[in-house]
Each structure stands twice: as C-alpha cells, then as structure tokens.
Length: 239
Image (cartoon, rainbow, N blue to C red):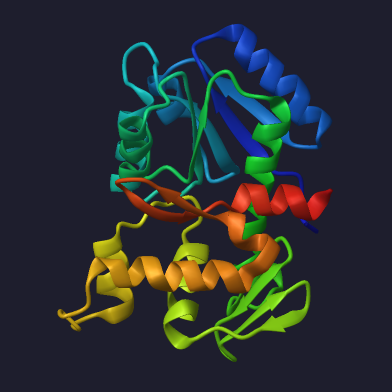
C-alpha cells in the first residue's frame, strides 16, 4: 500500500499486551498509541487514528459498549476486537456492534498484522481518494469487477453466473461478516419468495468449485451462514 504510516490505537487493560503489540506493530511501520480503558479510548480517539485494536473485557466501559457508542456517533474507524471470549455468540455480538474483525486470545503477532493489513488494503483499495477504482474489489489474487461483472483469479477470468456473482460481491464487500441464508436470499433473490434456503447452499457450492484453490476463502459457519475470509486470502497472496 502506498500511503503514509497508519496510526493505530491499541486498547487493553493489560500492560504487557499493550507493550508487545506496540513493539511489534511499530517494527512493521505503524504509528502506535495506547489506552488502558474504554473511557480513555473515547477521550483520545481522533480522526488521525485509522484503526482500533480493542479489548472486549475492559474495566468500566466494555469494548462492546465503546464500539457501539462510536458507531452511534457515526465514527467509522475500523475496529478489531481482541478478546479471550471466542464463542460464536461473542463473535456475532462483536460484529453486531460494528466490529470489522475479531481475534481471539491468545493470538500470534503475525495473525494480528495480517488482519490489520487486510482491513487497510480493503479500505484504501475501495476508496477512490486512494487512487484506485472503487468499482473493483481486490482481495489478494481475487478481483471482482462490479462494472464488467467479471471475476478474475490471478488475472484469469472465471465464468460465474449472475447469482453467483451477486453472492460473491455481497461477501467480498463485507469480509468476515456472517450472512445468514435468509439475508443472502433477501439481497440476491429479493422478492422471489418461493426460493428456498437450500438454493443458497447449491449456488455457494457451485461458486466454490469455480473459485478452485480459492474456494477455502468462503467460510460456512454451521447454523449461522456464510462469510468471506479475507485475511486468509491476503496471507496466501503475500507468501
């Protein structure tokens, strides 16, 4: 990414974790500031911060409440939750209050760096002010052209149907967000009420087959729905 150093606010009530993250992320070229509570986060956060690494279990205001308050105030700074709470319900709660990603403790520094880069790449590649075409979604080796309606895998065109394209577009525009079958049906099939949830499964299965080695980037969380794992895609791209 060709851009000025990214300023990140790290929020955790454990000093050791703050210092480990600060040291390693500064070595990656990020500008780091830290906070130890939700209250301090709300006081210190500024437009200069391009991302927040936010612990969920804070003394006083929880990370969930901090994120909820920021989103209600229309502050859209990307948020990655850091937490020892890693159940499906915790993950869904995190996304429902406006999280962009969710990393369970204990985590590897490499994983944190990959997740940050994935969010920043997505943010700036889809931002016209960054000098890129906002009509092309690029994640790793996968490109989805929203104008020509083409899917490119390492610059080779993969033939997909209109519905497959719309499903992939929905998932890639909201990486790591879980969409239920009903949400996908409502978005892609709209008012075609006779379409069953099983139809989504069939289309996703066909789409995965056409994605070939990239099929693993479409995740199925049993009982919840589908999501696009952009961090795995970025990691594979950078190897």
